[in-house]
Amino acid sequence: MGLSTQIIAANVDMVLVIMSMKEPEFNNGFLNRALVAAGWRGLRATVVLNKMDLCSKQDGKLENRILSTYGPGGAGYPVFMVSCKTGLGTDELLEHIRGLTVVMTGPSGAGKSSLVKHYNPALDVKIGNLNPKTSKGRHTTVSAMLIPLEKNTGLIDTPGLRMFSIDHIPRRELQFCFPEFADCIGNCRFRNCLHLSEPGCAVKAKVDDGSISEIRYGIYTNLMNE
Image 1: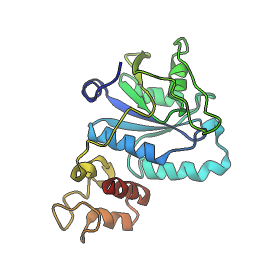
Image 2: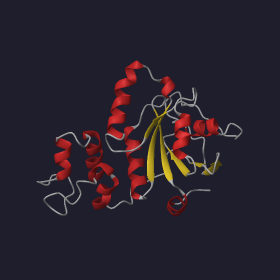
Image 3: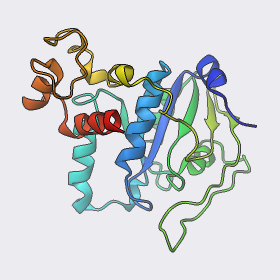
């Protein structure tokens, strides 16, 4: 059974984008596409950085860059750092989603099924290993399924790479999927500004002064140019 766009929009309160910090390595492109797709559907999104137990002190710069780019001081998304192995951050994440129906998406191997198993140990969930040749995850979820948790909380586990698409988003409306652009839209010199090469662009001004992340703006321009 698959999840259609209509079912997602009607029944889901939030999207959890599950990203692994290691094994497989953090995937900036997948994260941004998932966040854009959630924004287009009007769904709140939360970033979950999984497998923190595999990180060392040398990974601190990456962690800080992710937080500054996507967290409250950047794009404005809630960011949780968790480990299903040690339990780090899992209580805080559960409190964050309490009482909601939440759909999970993320690259194969990021740990979606492990998170489900952590919250509901009695559930018979298959957890896959990485492909030793490609260092990428193997699909262990072949169809969407709703996993009930405590106090009216539900997780929808989905096939890793096929959850959200952005192909249907009109090019002119992509800007509305970047929450950090919100204060700029309508304040550019030209009403039809696409925030690319136009003079007097409020978005580019904020990129220049560091208020908007160059990483996120780069993602926006790449998607616009596709």
